[in-house]
Length: 328
Length: 290
Image (tube, rainbow over all chains, first blue to last red; front, side):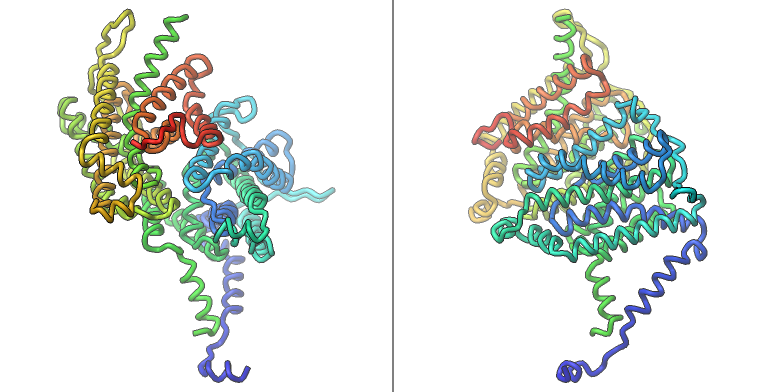
């Protein structure tokens, strides 16, 4: 012990806990610091963080590049919207149902898709988005077709005689923040568990993972379903926030956005996804960049990420975190 | 009844020809790069926009617009090829997917940003109908058929006999050996890519008078239709791509008539998923690539 202390003579103070506390206070006080529009941008960022966390489990931890996230996002949005409009169920019921329906649908879709590798898997998952959009457009009796579902009620909670309706941007921000934090903690728990290590083993070398007894097929299927659950939950919050769901929820645009968050922030890191959603969704929304310019920027980001900046911002975040933690 | 079916089949063959000219470029690019070009439909869109620009802004004739559309796309493709596609030689499949998705985003949204996202009227082409064997068919559709047949004969000859075609086949078989015997792999990739993009643009320019409207997002749909075709045809297989494009064109046309127009665009992806499940090597899995 003394040896390590003497070899590190200049030991800076550990600033990690103070910084985390400051970030927490900023996150809690954000609606009162920034304008309403900033709060709105943060809500959008928090909503997109959930499907991005799910995608990160697939891309970053298990090594499966999927474009299907928009499909499950849309399924979640429609499930929550339909429940709220038709039955007026409370928010948490819609949220849980959206997660469960997306996850359940991921099973029959995942079984054939996961038999494919690399590019074929990507094409197949892209197909889910297109077919999802076609179903949302054409199953008019359920989805009202191109008109979509409108006037989805504000999220409300009820427990016995007590009930509370989330109205206003600030209240919604706290709702989204709570769900975002819970989602992040859930991913953290998954990744830290033995299952998380097995997922990383599959990413690094699937054959080797199989040979040491990891049921790779079952793992991939479960992770695919989990990612769909995250996307579905995100979709349900999105539906309640925008109060409108249309077939355009099934769009490549959403899959690309989620992909940019994960890859840009740093695939295989949780802090990267949080940072990525704030940067790529929150900031672009706050700056009111038009969708076209945003997509051009995303396109260039993808090219830069692929050829020059392979790990995204994750190494920088880690270095910064280590620096303020007193390490050299 | 029978004549309606026949008419739909003929329409399907015309649509199939359009798809075939686009898809053959994509399948050749896959052959040399082992990567799916998710931006391929964007070159189709660029060609159409180039021609539309030439007619609407420069006041050129349709014939000149074809040249402008194809050449401007070739220039763009050359730049993209130099900067991006050449780097993809030997890169993992995921990088190819992401890089080409990035290119698609940039090309598509730049066009929308510059020209606006709305539909534009394409004023050009030979739209007078002619009557053949009792069917009336627009001249433009006949032109598409003829060009498609010529393109495929030309490609078949090029791939079999020319130096470039032989080099392409070699690269598609073994990149390292090509480098050993002195074939400039990245040059071949670049040329194949520019050729493929140029063909996609040609298809776009030829189809524009039939589709009438032009819009920035049109390339995405073409990319999505091209994917099932190249899988059905067997990746890297020129002749297979031709047959597969015809099958998809006819199937779409029949589905649009007898099932419902709204299901037309779903046929491709349903086919894609079924093909990937049961015959990922394609319907025409010959040993010969190209």
